[in-house]
Image 1 (cartoon, rainbow over the protein chains, first blue to last red):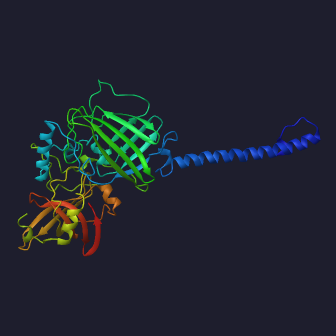
Image 2: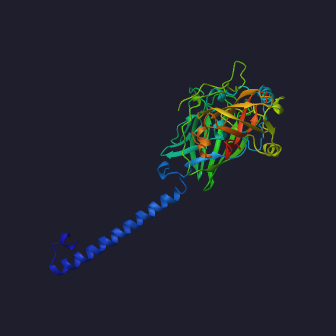
Image 3: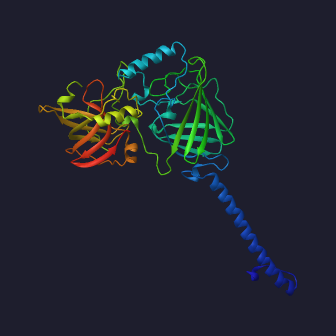
Length: 275
Length: 131
């Protein structure tokens, strides 16, 4: 290495300089490596528990990974209900009557339409959170659905048509992702019990990692048209680092389509399907 | 299902308590058509094993104690969830004799939601579909 260090000084200094230069270079390299290793370790620590660090964003607290909801199927894990205003109270009573009679009605998912927000957050199938600069993406196994949460400050416009998942704007408060979602379609339900909402629904979520294996989503539904007051539920999700999201095409062999009466079906035996 | 007792179906008393205490099983759609308070043991012969989404289906022939045969449709959870619980696309074949735990349709039709596949051709399977 000495031989390739350029030096115009006298031979003594040249020899010493070369020696010192090499030492400095070595120490410099070592220091550089140490700093680099520290940075890598820092990023790794931040990304600890990720399914894959590539799916996380080093500039965001890490909530990436593959999660599955725990607990009961209703939106509220303890089956609490919002205070429903007319006519939503009557609508829900009608749906619950049908549900309890074993002939559920108005369930859009029976026909493979998306569950929408907030229902998708409590379906019994996993989702993957992917974080990229300016975005948090929720990739759901259920029907291959997707939620985009924009972190770049963009907001929904009054001209936006209501959609199944609405428009989600988010920001970080410490290690909590705060998401506001609005412009949600009215005909979707909050859960499989048929809990209704109106198109005025605004959902505020506070999403954080409680511990390495547990994600929490505190979901507040504010819907002045359908609910007398805001309704908050807290859901938890279990990390499944070894799982992989699979394909799920609802239309492949859906035998639960509802008939003209809106009652979820149970199909007669279908012809053999090839896979 | 007033004739259920006539079929090769037996109310699994020990399982009923479990079904009552657990959270209802859930599907891609509302599961209200299934009786979550009752669990039957169903035995029969596989006609088709539909390894499909949104649900895997077992079509089976069940003969009652009078020798009358009927086709039953058994709805399982999704392909992906079953794979995570040890199922495989060829876990069952037409002609297999199966014994399973079923949450029956509440309207008495020949069908229901699979809780657990207990046995295939006399060999314990213990493959869970829904909890």
